[in-house]
Length: 319
Image 1 (tube, helix red, strand yellow):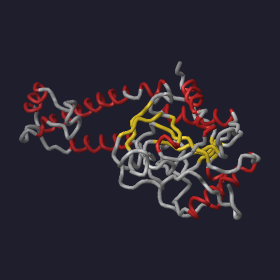
Image 2: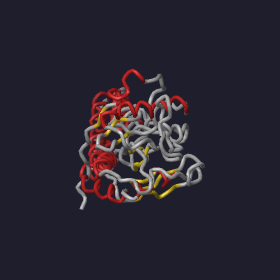
Image 3: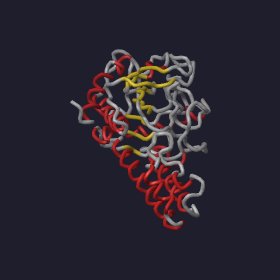
Image 4: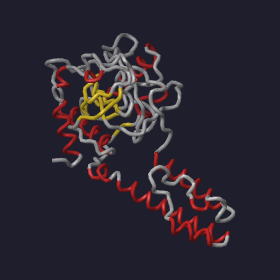
């Protein structure tokens, strides 16, 4: 319920972002790979001649450990017979060829994700509902990918006019960043009963932002909250479940994850249903109570999770 003053009471005992439990990636992997590739090629070009020790026959780190970066014996022998500048040029071309081959392999990996990619639903940016009520906060944190979503409800009144949702969301935000002293709203997305999707936690709609929504399982997951209270017997609008399915299909489609599958998640906090460090097999579209002992997202919404999974799978083009 929303007490006087407009701050929202949230039944979810969601934890603030965990710290030190998983490496935080500050940018897309492909961008980091390109940066590393430029460094390696620059290093090869700085060689002053072939045959210096065995250095002319080694790439500076490309494919190390997998064998992808090792030059054939015949190539090493040819480099050893070339004059210095020619050897440098040949080494550069060889390094570039290996990198092109590595890129081809890397491009083949996300084929499943591309196949099951779902369109991004329309999402109202947080700047629209939050405005100048935003508080100073630390920079967002990111994971490397999203392989599961957790569904919540906000435990706020259901009889709202959808035109009033921005003000209600500000109350949720103020309750979490004020009384709870969190750095930001915990949910990555909030969906109202009319089916409108709102951006929650800051950091970028398209990026794998680390949320603060499910104790022990904030990493590699997205938190989607249904605005309202969906305990036993409460009607759950189809517009709401359809919107949750659309967000789930889109976020999981980026990693080729089937919304109907189970995934492996590592608990970062012993206050969850699993010991810290334990690997849990959980639904790719899970309820908050799958990872933490809570009544969230309410019995009525929990009963609709199967429908949400099926709808999300259809949006990904799965039979």
